[in-house]
View 1 (spheres, chains in turn purple, cyan):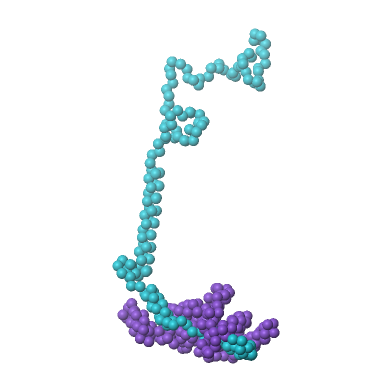
View 2: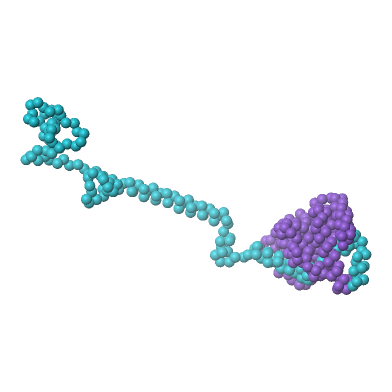
Length: 195
Length: 169
C-alpha cells in the first residue's frame, strides 16, 4: 500500500495552488475508486471481451473518463453502478466497432482465468473447452438476456446494481436472467443430443 | 482424466452454465493493475496540464480572445491597405496619357495584323494645295455625264452607250 500511496502522491501534483485541496480530494477519491473497484470492473469487462489485455484497456479507459469528469464525482450517489455503467458502455462500444467477437479466446487465456482448484491440468483444459462452448452459446442469446446473465455472473454486483447499470428494473433483470438460463439449457440439451 | 471427463459430463446443464459463468466472472487481472491505472492517470493529468515555459508559456498565458482580436484587427488593416492600393493603382493607370504606339511601315488601309493595334488617329493637318498643278480630286469632265468611249477597254457587263449618229464610225 505504501507503493500505492507513493504513486498517489506523485499523481497529486496540481498545477495551481488555489485548487490544491480540491485536486487532492478528487485525486484521493479516484485512487480509492481504483483500489476498490478495478478488479470488479476488470471482471465485467472480461465477461464481454474474454481477453485480458482488452479488459484491462477498458478498465483504464473507464478511470480516464472518471478523471475527465472528476468535477461530477461529488454528484455520484453510487460509484459502483456508475463505474460499471461506464466500463459496460466502453466494452460494448469496442465490441460494436470490432463487429465480431475476436477469435483469440485461446484455451490458455481461459485456463488462466479459471479458479485454481484441485483439478488436474488436463481436466482444466477440458473444462475450458466446455466453457468456451457454453460461452459461445451465451453469445447466441439476445442482447438483453446476454447482458443480464453476464453481469449476474460478477459476484460483486447485486441485481439492483445490475439494474442500475443497465438502466432498468430489478424485476426486468430477474426475468431476463431466467429467460437466458432457460434458453441456454435448451441449447445445451440440444447440443448434448447432437453430440 | 477420464474420470474428470465423466464427472463433467454428468453435470446438469444448469451446473455447466454456472461453472462457465463462474469461470468468466472469476477472471483475475495481472498483478499491478491498480499501479498501471494510476500511472496512466498520472500521465494523462500531466499531459492535460503541461506547464509550458518561455515563449510557449507566454503564449499559453495570453487569453485566446486577445489573440483572436489582434488577428482580426491585422486582417482588417491589411485588407483595407490592399483595397486602397489597388484603387490608387487603377486610377494612376487611367490618368496617364495615352501614347499611340509607333508602328513603322503601317499600311493605311488597315489590313493585316497592324490594324489590331488600334492606333490613335493622328491629328490631321491640312495639306496646302499646290499652286502649280491641279488638285488630285478635281473633276476632269466638262459637264453632264461622263462619257465612255465606245472603243475603250471595259469590263464585261458595263453598259455601252448607243452609237451616236454624228460620231465617226
